[in-house]
Length: 274
Image 1 (cartoon, rainbow, N blue to C red):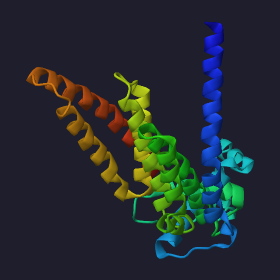
Image 2: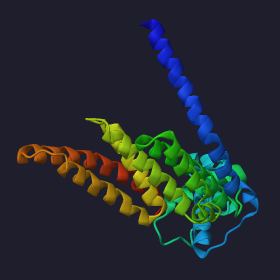
Image 3: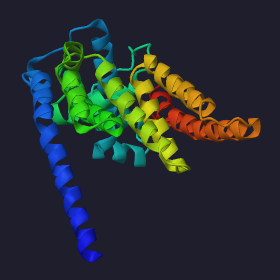
């Protein structure tokens, strides 16, 4: 039994390495198409300038909070010093973007700590998110199909001109796409569990909700997944109405927890920023 178990573990490890060997060239290609020369890109679109302005607010707020001088001003209730800190770090609240997109600008602000407060921060964020989306697309396709189909799906996304253009731009679509794919992946995984934990359902909702805080048009996907859940439930084959109603109630409870997760990013990011 011990030998059989060790053999199965060795086979599983070998299979994982083969999966990585298949995916790695596609991932390198995706990274090259998206990241090559990305530091030389700049703001291209009107919306991108608004995103950059909001990201700069997040970034400079974080710098104010992380500055030890600020904490000294807070402890001593020194309002003049705190106003000076706001001015020193260049915080400007005069112009804010009217669209709810702070999940995306929060990511750009985090990238500014790595690449600096430059116009390339947004395209760099998108390039990395789009590259990671190729991995998620592979995992999602692998859940339903064999390795060849999953590899083809990842390759098509990696070389898709539409995706590459947005990955090298300063718009929110690439980040939203990553979280939509990740949320769909989490939703598919919880479908296989007869009674998924509440934490898994909330996490699924948080991924979908974060996509919504990146781009408001992402709302269509949770609605579509909910509709697919209802169709699966109705098509399950129970002829008796009580059983069908019981399944509908179970699915409704799942979506209550997913819905709770959907609200968390909006409350933690969008509401805090506003």
